[in-house]
Length: 259
Ligand code: PEP
Image 1 (cartoon, rainbow, N blue to C red):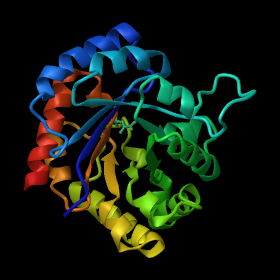
Image 2: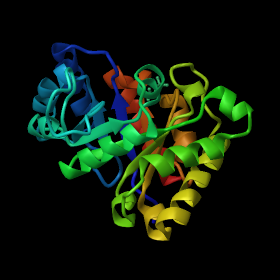
Image 3: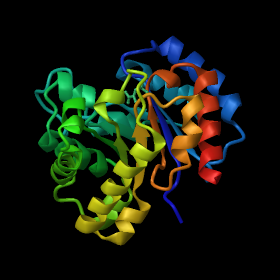
């Protein structure tokens, strides 16, 4: 059996608490008939919007994630947020190592590794982002870049833990650009990621790990992308900012997965 389908919306630095609450209130009825066995639905608002969204999503099939977490439990780390703080706020998931964090805020594979461990220690479920730049793809080093990110990011984790993770493969050149990897191109890379996980952590972990695609996934390409055997859903930016486009994307992804 393939890994389950997981669709997560990364709101980035968008949506005040009031706007986030309104989005979730609009989304809930549109996805109410979707069971977690078809797709896990997650929204990841900014920190200050989390509590309002946790409240709005309570009792529904919409789960809540944060967009980052610090690796220390507490201390002198101005402006940072710990895993325990997120847990207390009612958060279940956390995005770690998004390319915008890597590009603009000095995120490295070592800090990604620390954040993953802190999240897991607090029973948060990490969504770990990896991806190559356009220059790296054109230079023919995509596999090497992804393997380096995975080896560093997942260092010290055991096979059972890795088997329960969510990875988001996001080619940096496809994020927010409208350029999507073709389903075949994305599948080829997802397959290569799964093989690498198998070689490091074993076949069972490779089978159960969720590998999302991210990068201009929209309602009109979600079906074809999620029809690929190694694509287990998506991490969605722009198309997750409106309830109707996000709900349509989720439904099309489910149709794709059914085949
Ligand atoms: C993202 O930032 O994770 C993302 C995939 O963005 P978009 O869907 O807008 O390309």
